[in-house]
Length: 201
Image: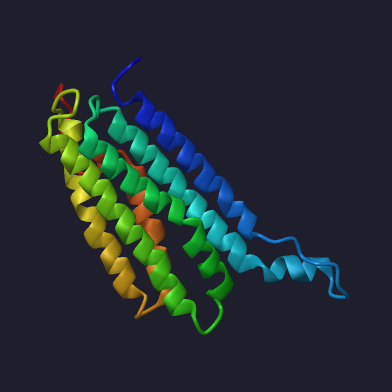
């Protein structure tokens, strides 16, 4: 076994895979009606948008989970519990995605976007708690400049996603655009975005 965390990583990968697969099930096949099929397909654009958005987010969350566990080499009961909380958030993503797809151009758009953003606030909190717990309990392989950069990057997560949530009451479109910007930010390795110097510099 490569490390104590091998089973955690394998189980988590399975959960991420299931959650990202479930997203496509919310895109329905148009029924046979008198309306042109092309028109019915085009009318489902909010479902395509929500699917692509959440696919991007879950994919980046999986990348970040992998990055964390390249540093986390030991596990205890607390880490197991916090990882389960994170996976709870990941499993929940298909539901707010479906709600957003249905209500994006309806009177409930703001509520749907708030639910969507709120889900990612929770996930950001769980990611931060998981990482900070691993650092505080000395579960990392060894402290590095990269792990310090991850700590700084992740401290911004809950605050930034709360701002996205607050923006829902200003503009649903802007709040979703900020979510995309945050996804791009967290897709970039922490050592680059926090300008931590290289170990050999």
